[in-house]
Length: 317
Image 1 (cartoon, one colour):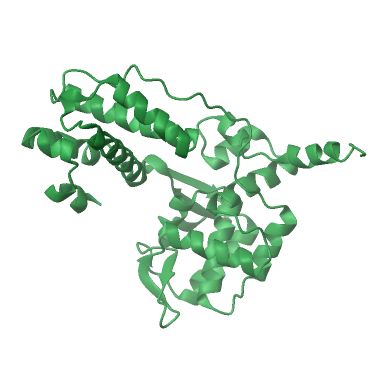
Image 2 (cartoon, rainbow, N blue to C red):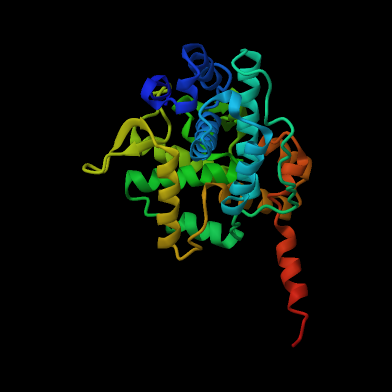
């Protein structure tokens, strides 16, 4: 993505029109101030979308942008995007214009006075599997192939550690390691944080079987979960991409007869719900999921779903 940013042809017109100093400041915002590649990609998409919105209005210079233009964009976006997406776009616009203000490209930030839409949520929208469905999915995977062993281990990792897919695909072979009598995993979480936790016995078995069959146990610095060569069916030296994990999960879910709308995050929510249903404590689940707030962890707790369904069925019409 960085080479694309540095291409002059990739600069939005309004940035190019402001001159070399503004272009350099714009590039610095995405390369120097934003370290997370996913945030960088999301914010770049947001500001490109904003600048594209301004062009038909004749706004081709930064000094022409007024709060009413930012507000109009937010109003437009609310008609076609979810509130969290709208809030993210406004955050990206504000941060970029702040950065340009500090860099003396513009005099003030016209986005400061624009309010984001109100949005609060007490229950997450991620699809959650029952414990029986999760077990059925794991058992349905054909483990006579290296792809099957990899997929079972990867899904189990997200399920038993509450790990994000980005943290899983960033793991190296050495991130599965013995400590005392147990094996541990080390997840590469957002912000460069490393999060280590002991393996569930099922996860330990699945990882050992995958690593042994793949014969990568001595390749400590290489990716743990690797892509598959479509022609040979063998592992490549490259880590599997997040997008391919999503597609793999959809294929595995379809083959197991499970809901088609499950995602990588499904296993995070399913694991947390199963843990809490078996008497686990919310504060420990927060620590295991590496959440900053227990309120975030609570969004993944779906224990109340079954209770609510039972109550709804009392309506005997």
